[in-house]
Image 1 (tube, rainbow over the protein chains, first blue to last red):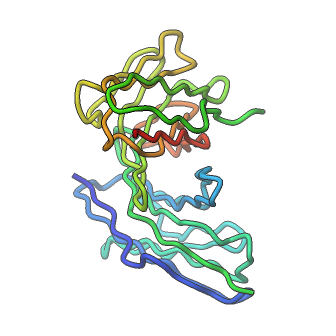
Image 2 (image 1 turned 135 degrees about the vertical axis):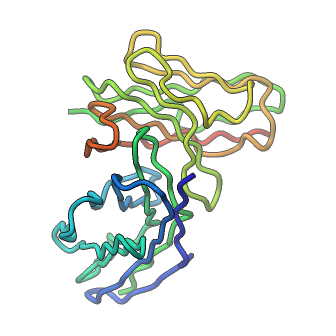
Length: 113
Length: 118
């Protein structure tokens, strides 16, 4: 069974600075997808970024980028120029065949002014 | 267009009662998923529908939990004889297709129903 581990329960960052959230996963699959979701206090899960395992190039979405290391089974999220609105719980998630998402326990990110 | 909607937003019930939680997926999305999120944890998969049929119900914890999607759109998660341990946020998501490992199909989530069993 696949597992996803987020080793940082909480992180803080000053507004405008950069922060990196860690994620590791375990799978025997070769084809899969990785995701970062953001969950603000409203509970709405919002997709931040996704990465296809067969792509070597790291995904980027505006201020959000990932560092995908397939051999190490590592998938970290970098948030540049942090904004107050980035304050939320961030979940790393894995999906292979079968469609269900497997989530990590989450990291609470607090952006301070 | 409208996103995934879930009703009610909050549900408080007593131990032993029956509850129904409703999910309205994004129009045209054929795949629908239910997850359960306990306090301080990530969501855990319960069941996934492709059209009207349950394609994977391996996450349902026991036979008190049941879900239907009779017309391939709206889905209802039903919990019988509720227990205090059922208290959680129940999240619904939908995606355009079911894809499989070769698809990048994104799951869009609703705001969830917070269930509290007293």
